[in-house]
Amino acid sequence: MRTSLRRLAPALVALTAAAVALAGCGSSGSAGTDAGASASAGTGSFPATVKGSAGSVTVDRRPTHIVSLSPTTTEMLHYIGADGQVKAVDDQSNYPASAPRTKLSGFKPNVEAIAGYDPDLVVLSYDTGGVVKGLRKLKIPVYVASAATTIDDSYREITDLGTLTGHADGAKRTVQKMKSGIAKAEQGLPKRTAKLSYYYELDPQLHTATSKTFVGSLLRQLGLTNIADKADKGGTGYPQLSKEYLVEANPDLVFLADTKCCAASAATVGKRPGWNTLTAVKDKHVYGLNDDIASRWGPRVVQLVQAAANAVQAVPAT
Image (tube, rainbow, N blue to C red; front, side):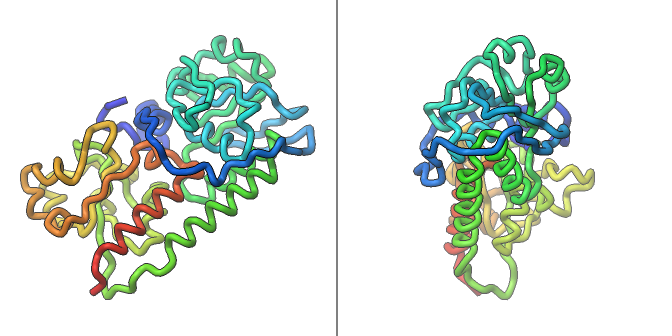
């Protein structure tokens, strides 16, 4: 998935945006420990009903054949302790490494192929190609966990999945650990007379995310100002900047969410025409991020917030 709009998570450019959030980079690199994952067998009360992005979904009994068609929901199911119930995941779900990865596509879902796994619950993030309607015709429960725009959206989806899978306790613990981790990352940041500015790169074509997006909302909590906000004339949340705009904005920090897909690094961006004049480049405040974590909205976002907080800490307070 190396298109120029690769990771514009929410559905703002129809199918392209869907592909972005579903795919991540396909990297399987380490992202830390599974401290948030629950190993419990799980409990729950059934039938269970929750309201997903595509309406209410009810499961009559604890599901034992879950199909996940989104890397984010696969991670969520892992962290709440539902691994043993997941029988198939899509071709982009690379975390955890033990997930039962298949050729199923969340970008171009095939109802017959999904049904072939005899699922008693299907979890996905985008209703593309009428997949939800098709699965419901087959009496298969479907929960849609749309791309989050705030951290509360993520918490709600994790809680919903806990209810549907019989892992309410695991979901509660996961949300608590996320809240604790984010709060810890935000604590102790130096007080400044002026906010630091930043540029968040999605690809080398200078597509970026504004403060109105999920990742932008997380970075705003760190007291940062997003240089892309004024450039978002279309209000999509994902403008493409010009080199001239970027150089004039002169961000204090640069975050690269295209290190794996596009081999972006402090060294490579420093060689781009005009970039040697940027404060972030001159002061060595260019930071590479894990593409997968940066493109998803599951429990590992805590690592993203911590990485950004560490970058803020590295800039001397004035």
